[in-house]
Image 1 (tube, rainbow, N blue to C red):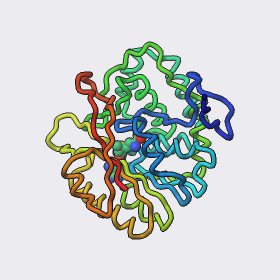
Image 2 (cartoon, helix red, strand yellow; image 1 turned 135 degrees about the horizontal axis):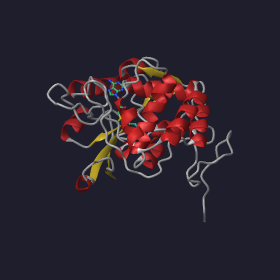
Image 3 (cartoon, protein in one colour; image 1 turned 45 degrees about the vertical axis):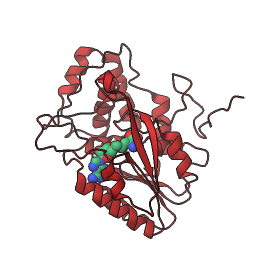
Image 4 (cartoon, rainbow, N blue to C red; image 1 turned 90 degrees about the horizontal axis):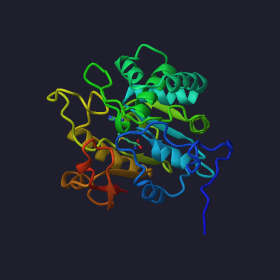
Length: 295
Ligand SMILES: C[S@@+](CC[C@H](N)C(=O)[O-])C[C@H]1O[C@@H](n2cnc3c(N)ncnc32)[C@H](O)[C@@H]1O
């Protein structure tokens, strides 16, 4: 028996590839949760209160929840510390026409030469729509959908060599835009985002996995300049416990390491899930990685 994917309530149009429903992430983001999405959705169950995703990245979990029939009835609060990414979220929510016409231009001009010209640009003084088109274009046309910048903020992922990447996926962006109406999106630290979470709300945490020593590395590869170290992981574990004590439902994903397990003693419940990791330049290192889901 074939079970159809739920159709979007507002937009009858489907994306060009046909089989995937619109309302998916507009960028591919390292640590994106596509592989373990069914496990996460099953554990989150119906979300009745407000939904918080303080490390939103590309938002695979948010979009999967929001596009379900009934969506997120009490709304959502999303945040991330990567300012260019957050400005992209703002532009998709508030200024889609401008983003779409800039992406159409990128689509038309797309070539290896054009990619390297766009890559040299540091767009921070420009509008949110221009930052969004810059980030989405480089993400679609760059190698493996990576986002990586050097210490001067210059994007340094090489050309992706895909002959015809879909730079402007309008049905998907339109659906994302609809799903984002009324959603709070902030550029701030996860702790600040969770100040608003109250009894009956749900928080899903997907923090950066490894502690990152930015200062000692030549080329900076973290999501944000501040990185995310052991002290941040401890701060997060304390926050998760405080939220639980306030009656907030908490789900957290991370890599399965002994240090991490120590941070979440009972009453937390830890489940191991084996997932393939695809975002790795070196094909031989794309093995399985154990992840944990913590409740
Ligand atoms: C593992 S990724 C999230 C991936 C996301 N679940 C997805 O589906 O794409 C972690 C995110 O946390 C963000 N981040 C890093 N430090 C942060 C902080 N202190 N507060 C909030 N977000 C932070 C990074 O910019 C990155 O986008």
